[in-house]
Image (tube, rainbow, N blue to C red; front, top):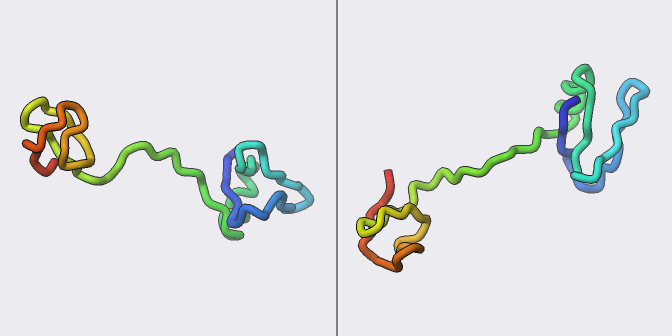
Length: 84
């Protein structure tokens, strides 16, 4: 079973080949592998489990803390440089 997100929050269920896929409590639809392609064609997407920002951020030269703001979130120093 694969988890897919519906193309619109108003979509509560979808029927393919006589099988009804209903939206689960987490907002996803759990579909069989053989109906996966049809659902993708209909606009369903895979949920992304991100967690890493793609921004370089800033590095504090005093304490070495990596943050997303120029002001250090750990020691409040402004002695920072752009991360690489």
